Image (cartoon, helix red, strand yellow):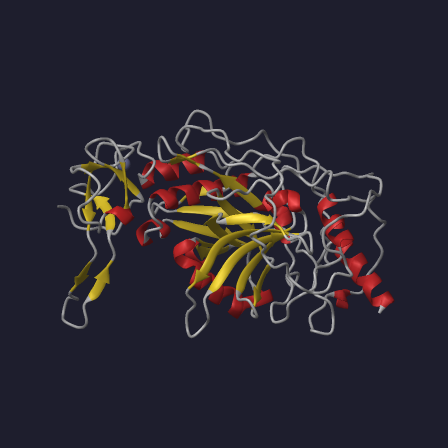
Length: 447
Ligand SMILES: [Zn+2]
C-alpha cells in the first residue's frame, strides 16, 4: 500500500458495482463486497476502519476516523474528477480568467473587488433588518437578467466545492485552493466553510462579526427549508445542533432572506453554496446566519445518484418580480460620516460587496414603484424568524432537481455563460451605494 498522502474520498464502489460510503466501513458485517475501487476511475480503494494510531516519538495516541483512500496509487486516473491536476485544469479553463492555476499546483480564485468596508451589520446585537426599500435600492441595480446564470466567480467557487465534496474535504485537497481578494491571498479554509468546519465558521463570525475582511462562503446540504409564518422571511437549515467549541453551546447554521424567492429552490438534500459578507450570530437560540439579498450570492445543485457526481449548479431566479424595484433616485451628497458604526445607529443594510459577483446583471433604470412586499419591513422588530419546521412546504417554484449532467469537468463545454454584462458601477470614493446612503439620510432625518 502506498503511503497515505492524506487524500480521502466520499464514496467508492464495491465489487458488485454498488456505492460504498464512509459510514459503512465500521459496520460488521460490512455491507459491501471487496475489492473496492473509485467510482470514477479504475484505481483500487481501501476502506480503513476507525482505529487509534500511536504518535511517532510517543505521546497519546490519536484517533483515526474510518475513511476511504486510494490503495497503491498516489493519484486518481488522469481524467477522474477526483484527480486534482485534472480538476484544477478544468476549473481554470471554465473560469473566464478568474481561477488561475499557479506554478505550485494550486488554484487561485480571484474574487472581484467591488466592496467598501464597514457595510456589514454588527453581530453583537440582533440586528433589525434594513428597510426593504433599501434592499430594493441595492438589488434593483443589479437584477433583471434574462435568466439566472452563474456569474464566473460563483461558478468557479462551486466547481471547487464540488471537487472538495468528492474528496471528503480532506486537508490536502483544501490546501490546493486559495482566494485572491484585493491582492491578498486567503487560504480556502479561511474563505469557505463546509460541514467539517462549521465550528470554525461559528468562531469566525463570533470573533470577526462585522469586521469580516472579505466575503465568506458556506457550503452545506439543506436539511429543511421554508418561510416563517410570522415574519414571511425565508430560511434554509444547513446544520442543526452542531457542537460548539470553547464552551459554546450547540448551534445551527441557517441561510435567511427577506426575499422568499431566493431560497425557494432549496429543497432538503440539495447542496448549496452561499457567498457574502452579511453574517450574524444569534445568541439566544445559537445560530450562525447568512443573509442573502440577491440571487447571485447563491448556487445550488443536486447529486446524480446514478453516478455520484454533482449535477449542474443553478442560481435562484432574480428578484425582478418580488423585489419591488423602484426608480433610482437622484444621488445626493451625503456626509462621509454616514456609516453607522456604533450601536446607536441602525445596522448597516445589505452590503454592496457581493455586487461584484453579479456580473451577469443589467440595470433596470426605470422601474415603477410596485406593490408592497410581504417580507419584513422597517417596522419589523429586530427579530429573526424562528425556523418553523411545521410550516407548509415552500412554493414549488423551481427545479427541485437541477437537470442531471455529466461530470463537472466538461472540457469541451465549460458551463460558463456568454460574456456577462456588468451592473452600473455605482461606487464612488464614498463607501456604500446610493440606496444605502439615501436610507441612512432618511433615517437620520426621521430620528
Ligand atoms: Zn478516481
